[in-house]
Image (cartoon, rainbow, N blue to C red; front, top):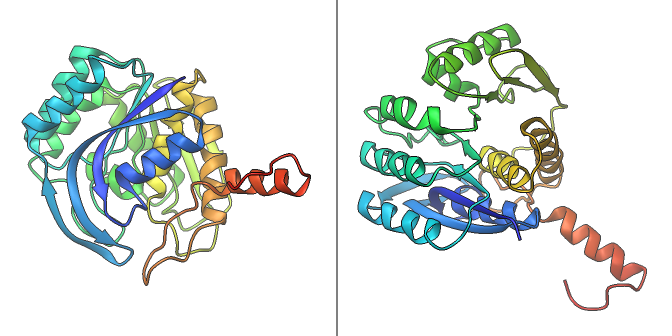
Length: 276
């Protein structure tokens, strides 16, 4: 069975972070593992508090996985301080997994800062060059590059800046555009565009985590980066279209919608008689 490892923070309401990643891995038929970097107290209304795991414990978790189980892909999410970033970078250099997806989590949807200002430079210098692909949204790309993004041309300019920082491939997500969303992939040679339709729902908690972990899942299964993005976008689109109105704020996507739908179809035709 193919495997994927998420290195990220825990989300107590389970819409984002480690919990969203593990749900996504499962939905793709990939065995999921986790290294927890921080514990957050949060719900659909926002982040209440964050407590980091020690860098030493993060390293122990990484050693525990890599010395025992083959890792086909890694998704890296919330790394909130310099010591943790350095520890993760050091271990990824040591174990050299084939596929690393970096989702540079910097600010939550509720506006809570998740990456310390002194940690950004370490992230870009030490971790970014190790990754197969980095997947910032527009606000994150603006923080990384200093480029104000209002158009597709601005996104392309930002891609080039991130490439010059050492990234191998960059996918800037266009959900924050005023038009229909367009994601742009840049590999240093050319651009590829992934054009979508805006889905009108407030329930988008964890979409970035979910997309990046879906890309990692597909890379683990042997797909190319471009094909992994296509399949991941198909998955997240369905998850957003069938998002869940849970809580009083921004609800989560529906990670298991396609699985539940398939189970119900099999029940209807009499080929699946047990409870899903």
